[in-house]
Image (tube, rainbow, N blue to C red; front, side, top):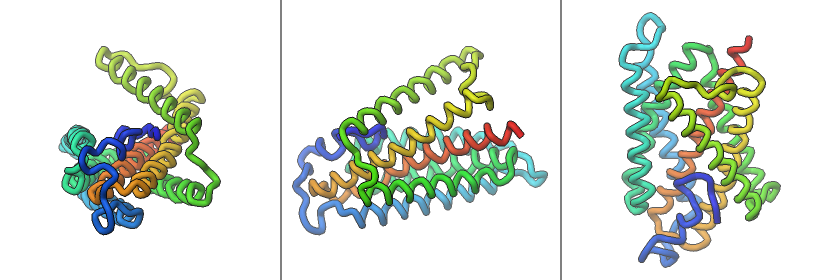
Length: 253
C-alpha cells in the first residue's frame, strides 16, 4: 500500500508493533468508528476556526493586529502535533483532537484574510472541498475509482513532486526570490493550482484505501483516531489549495 499522505503511508497499518493485526471485536478498528471520529475532528476544527476568524478581523473590517499569531501559531503548532501523531500513533486519541483544535486556529485566521480580499471565497472553497470528498467517496465505494498499484504510484510521485516545488519555493523566499509563474494568476499559475487540487483530491482515494485496509486487517481501536487524523490532513491541504486557486481566478477579474 502507498499513500501520498505522510500520515497514511504504506506502513501505517503494517508496523504497529505488538498491536499489529491482532485486535478483535470491540478492540478492533471499524469503518463506522473512523467515520464518527472524523466527524468529531471536523467539528473541533470548525469550532476553533470560528473563534480565530472572529479574532482575526478588527472592528474596521481589516485584519486585526494579532492575526499573525493565529496563523503562525496554528500552523507551527499543528505541524508539531502532526509529527508527534505520526511517530506515536497510539497517542492519536489525544493528539488527533489536539491537532484539529490547533489547525482550526490557523484555518480560521487564514480564511478570514482570504475572505477579506475576496468576499465569499471561503464558502466556495468549503463547498468545493466537501463536494470533492463526497464525490470521490461515492466513486470509491461504487468501484468507479480503484486504488491500483499504478494509481497509487502515480499519485505518490505527483505529491512528492509538488512537495519539492513548495519546499524550493519556501527556500527561495528566504533569500527574497519568488519562484516565477506558479504563484501568479496567469495561465501557468492557474494550471499549476488546478494540477495540485487534482492531486490533493486523489490523495483522498488513497486515504480511503488505507483506512479500509486497516479495518480489514483488524488494526487496534486507537487507529480509528489515526485514520481520521490522516483524512483531516488531506482535507486541510485540499481546502487550502482550493483557496489558492479561487484567489488566483478572482484576482484576474
